[in-house]
Structures are given as C-alpha cells and as structure tokens.
Length: 147
Image 1 (cartoon, rainbow, N blue to C red):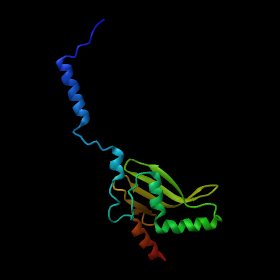
Image 2 (cartoon, one colour; image 1 turned 180 degrees about the vertical axis):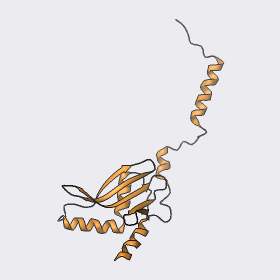
Image 3 (cartoon, one colour; image 1 turned 90 degrees about the horizontal axis):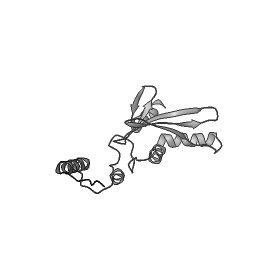
Image 4 (tube, rainbow, N blue to C red; image 1 turned 135 degrees about the horizontal axis):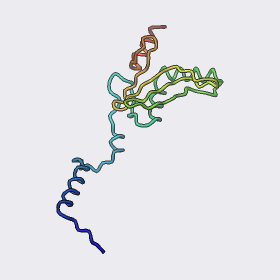
C-alpha cells in the first residue's frame, strides 16, 4: 500500500487556493441577508417601501402604482369580477421586463410595458407615444396632460 505524502510545495499551493477562494471576505453574513437589506428605490422612481427582490415583490410594487390600480379596476369591471391585471415577466441581464395588461382568451392585451432595474430597483414605464422609458411619476403627469 502506497501512502500519500503532502509535500511543502503542494501544501503552499492548497493554502494559496484556499485564500484566493476566500477573496478577503471574512464576513459570515450570508448573501441572502445582504439582498434583504438592500436600499429602497432610488429617488425619481416609484415609491416602494421594500426593496424588490422576488417576482412577487415586483408585482406588488407595480400593482401599487395608481394607474395600474385604475386599469385593474377597469379589467375587473369589464370581466364581471373574473379577471384582474395580468403580468408577463422576462428577466434580462440588467433588468426585469414586465408587460402588464388583460389576459384575454384569444390574446394578451398589453396596457403597460415596465422595466425594473435589478441593481437600483428603479421602475421605468414605456411611453408609447414618445417611445421612451420614463419614471412612473412622469408617466402619470403625461397621462394627466392628455386629459
């Protein structure tokens, strides 16, 4: 039977690899704790109390927007209280892309297109007339100016 002997060079190599993997991070805080403690939305974006972390957080944040609430009431009324606002969420590299609208039997009718930044949690909504992404506050102001 052959025994394996740890040579000094191999020992130094293992220590170097272990310290490189640590990368100077001596914190014992799990990654999930840092996500939960993420700062709220940056100024000039939607006013959200909790940071957006999950798809449910995104849906709750979007459902809290006044113009989405109004559209939800409209869909609820038109569908005789059978449907509400529906969402389709796609995850891109830097943001979540969300379409909000009415999920009919024959097609999905998009009312709003949102983008939620994964890092800053900033919400933007597409102004289809100007073909630009703007803040929900700016979107509401433009909607009021039209009426």
